[in-house]
Structure formats: structure tokens, C-alpha cells
Image (cartoon, rainbow, N blue to C red; front, side, top):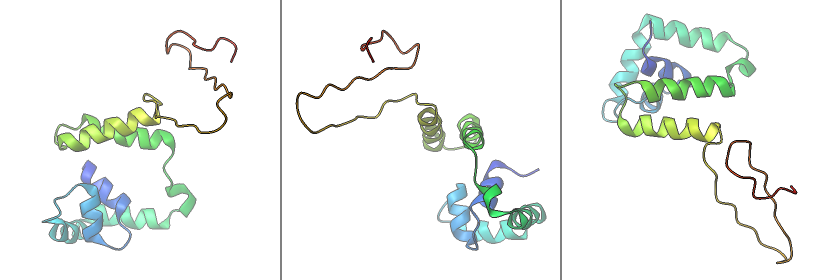
Length: 128
């Protein structure tokens, strides 16, 4: 069974093992050696070959797959804290847990009404 980093390596591999190892979370200092080692791993090599046989459109992750991936990283205690925090942030953004700042320019007499999803507090714009 492959580790999370090995699965990330398989997903990131596009012909450059060093870059794929770095993207997968291996140290930039050891990425070259790790990439070469991973390409010799029978299970990793088989996963890369299986991925390459799939039609291209099937390799694009769905929203649920991305959320599962971020959740796995967030819950993995062997991951670095910054990576776990980033995964939790991406997961939260994918579920609209945060509101981004919106700037508007134009005539001052324009009224912007926003209806928040149910459960997000009192409705500030009952007419929206």
C-alpha cells in the first residue's frame, strides 16, 4: 500500500521525478534522490503506468476527491504543521467557510444586496 507522499508523487509525476518529489512533500534537498528511489518502487511505477493509460479527462480530480485529499493531509500527523494548516485552509475555502473581501467601484447610488446561506446569522437584506 502506498503512502500519502507516494500517491502525491504519482499524481505530480509528469516526467520530472525531482519536481514531483518536491511537490509531493519531500525535502527540496533530497528531492532528486527521493524521485529516483520512487521511480524504482514497483508499486509507484505501476501506479504511474496505470495513470498514464487512463483517458486524460478521468485524471482531473473532482471536488470531492480534492476535499478527500486535503482532509487526508490535514489529519496526517506525520505531515508538517504548515502543510496541514494549508490543507485545512483549502478545504475550508472549498466549502465556503471564509468570505473573501469584495471591492466595488461605480456610482455611489448603487445598492449591493447579499443573501447569506441559511445559518450564517440574521439576514441583513430581507428583500434580496
